[in-house]
Length: 490
Ligand code: MN
Image (cartoon, protein in one colour):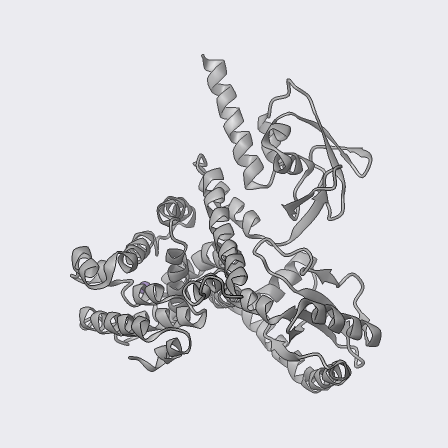
């Protein structure tokens, strides 16, 4: 088997490796006459996709399906033959990817959004299909330069609008940032190169300071006897660009370009390290966020803080446990790694249940999102909802009963009402935010306490769509509007 797949041996069993070898040989034969735009044999693409999936330690069926993912589309091999060789599980994954492929490389991105929605509904039964598709897209983006300039732009735009948000939502942060940076380079080469050069310059002038700072950190944490390691965190250039745009600042005004991660063994030790750092360094005001106590929607957990070093360099720092780190890197994929290994009654069972639940939650999110979008005929609506729902900038707002409601940044009192209950949203009359009477379009902040006033005979109006940003609220309002319309026709 290919060298790129040797890493499978670190986490799969021999019987799994045998099936994968067989898939490899099979794909090698079936694609033997094909070459890619890069001039490489087609098989190299299949191997790269499988290798991406091995990086996030996906299960054997997913790796086999990755090796075979283009076989039904591009060769004479039939579905029946594949089932006979590899069984239903692998083939259903291959079929799912093939379905998604039918809709790639179109020129109109909003038309594609509609296709995506239909296809996702069809494949949502198994989230692994989407993960294979993401790995496929990642390799296509890495080898983009061999396509025509026009095609390059289309594929890059699609990656930025559809694939990167999905990778983000599934918590596969590594893929998300690579997809973004590759797309950014293709779509805005001038801006990309400008930021890249500036970043490299800044990194160079700071490299001494950073090493010194890292050593200082090690020195002050060591006496506690806590187990820890420090990792440098690569920066996502597209993220920097977005930040400059959002805050309307030039590159020179962006401070927190350097990141470190401190990985330790337990939650208690994470907080202990935090307090050690706190007692020795200054933090940037308002930079501390506790995502351990309040995890992000994708189950991400870490302590976030920006430390000001003795040399006045701002260092974005994350403190987390090994388990949180794995989840942050692998996201939803973490689930499949635990699938087979754990015996009932074993101490690890609890962990497995928790991880399984994470993966199921994500699938639930996707199902729920598609359900909300079921009646949407407008593709730009689908795209902007996808963007809102994939956005992890969240606010936490309280009901008068102290229940926390998580909302995307920019959500209004009306969104809040719908998040509490769709009936409450439908009867929205007004909101009291922190004791003050507020309007329907009031944007809520973390820590706000919001009470919704309702009235029986209120009905959602067309206007409400201007005030609601969440997919949940918007789909409900649209449904109500349509119902009322039908009623008045009768
Ligand atoms: Mn492919």
